[in-house]
Image 1: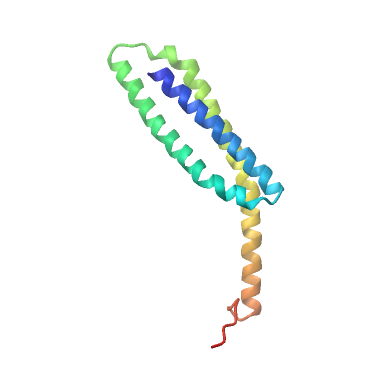
Image 2: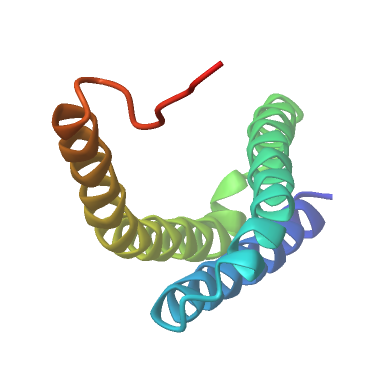
Length: 125
């Protein structure tokens, strides 16, 4: 059971890493629709990984209580940790691209608001 949980987590992490790589490529291509389409799926993957992490911790504790030497899973857990670190780094790379773009748009809106006295759109009745 522990091995299956680890394998499922690694698979989800790989899929999520690929989705982030696709996001980075779509940002370069200004393919914003694809980015939006993936957001919900990526959120589901992240939630599932968090659930599996909790399950894995419970399984390891249960195995220890049953007298199982959980060191037999050390290499698999270490690999899982490395996969999570790679995911974190890749997500940081995505954020380093997205955050400056977000700031640029904020500055444009702020400038337009300042030029129009706080109203971007003039509404006449």
